[in-house]
Length: 233
Image 1 (cartoon, rainbow, N blue to C red):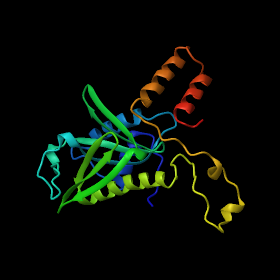
Image 2 (cartoon, one colour; image 1 turned 90 degrees about the horizontal axis):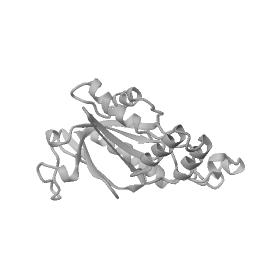
Image 3 (cartoon, rainbow, N blue to C red; image 1 turned 120 degrees about the horizontal axis):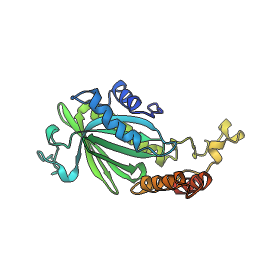
C-alpha cells in the first residue's frame, strides 16, 4: 500500500507527483502548477488531496489513433487534449483539471462510480482507461508512469470497497482474536461516509456559502447544510 499524503496547495500537489514519478509536463513546471491551482481551488471545505499525478488527457469521444487488438482506439500523445492535473482526495473523489487562458476546465467523479481501470502499455508509451458511471477518459504517458497512475487509482477504489475511508473512518471489523476487539475505537464505531454525486455538489456548497456571507443564513446553518449534503449526518 502506498503512503497517503495531505496535499493542500498546487505546489504540494506538483511536488508529490514529481517525487513519486507520477508524470511531468514537458512545457515546464510553471504551466503544470497552473493546472494544479485550478484543482486546488475546486476543493471543498476540509478536503485535500491524498495523491496527485500528471498526464495528457483524452475523453473517449475524442480518441484518435490506431486501433488496439480489442478494436478500441488507442490515443496518441499529440492527439490528446493536453496536460491535465489529477488528484485523489480524502473525500473519495478523483478530480482533474486543465488551465487555459480565460477558460478553465475542472471535473470530478466519485471513486465508487469507477467501474473499470485498464492500463494499456506498449514499448514506450501507454495510457490508462478510466470508465465510470459518468465520464470515460484516458490518461496518457510513458508505460511506467501509466502503471503507477493506474495503481494509485486502483488503491483508491479498493479502499472504498474495503470500507477504508481516506477521511479517517475505519469501518472494517477487527479480525477474530485481534486485540482491537478489546479496545473500542472511534474509527470502528463511526458511521461510514456517504460518497456523494459531485455533479452539482460544488455549486450547491458555493451557493450556500455565498448566502452565509451575504447574511441570508447563519454560519451554524451553513455548517448544518454542508454536513447533511456530504452525508455526515
